[in-house]
Image (cartoon, rainbow, N blue to C red):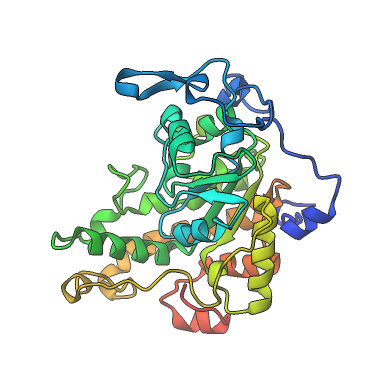
Length: 377
């Protein structure tokens, strides 16, 4: 059977029914000999009570932690992490995961994994307004985390049991949303023209920058090592600029979702999504999501709104062409390879596949979207 015909990943419900699915407790030993995941910290399970912070981190100047203690196990502090991507509904997602009684989620972004400052992250997990109850599920979000080479290294080393949640959307609509978000936030300063956001293989200079490089969702996902990364076809989809040295293989489970699933107008699918996300996160409480609503309404000054773009305008054709090339490669790689991993789960698989297949089309081509009965999320 070819990779093209390989079965897609199971849904969360499929895995729940399959008792033989292995529990994720340790990092795989697959990969290069210098794979940082091999140096992971020991796993001891959750303590009965919160240990003092001094037993987990080394004290630095002015009380700022300088590092994780060599004999410390901090893996129990983090149950899940939303690691990507910006403007893909991560705020709404974290609000919905903050269920009463059994979960605690700080709505501020905690980016210690990607910033390679795990000690500071542990300090926050101890000192943020969480209930001092180790049985409470704890989660963080940092939409830029998956773009950092340190995130997967630190997850494998310090938090090998942490589940990973990733949200995606059509790269063209992602670009428009991110660009307009920045245009609103930096007002009255102006955003550069979209042609200056075309940056090829170079990462953005700052995490707040908008550039086409950041829309290579498939390349960041591929770093997780969930696919063979061996065939010529797969390598072509990840080119140019693919670097095997950035791959950190682990057994961590990944919940992959499309932003539109957060506010699906189909109540049956939305209810299934709520249940699948609740099961994946190990929660008893209800996931709160509203049909047809992804983000709260925002008041935007008229002057700032005039600085925003309509990505479908002809003046943005150049950046849209670049993004479409990336979108088609990402769509093919996700559907043919990433979803074939048993460690990657989705909700309502057929619908998810339909959403990602739509990346083959330019969302500004209304005929294509109408033909596939889709909206411009």
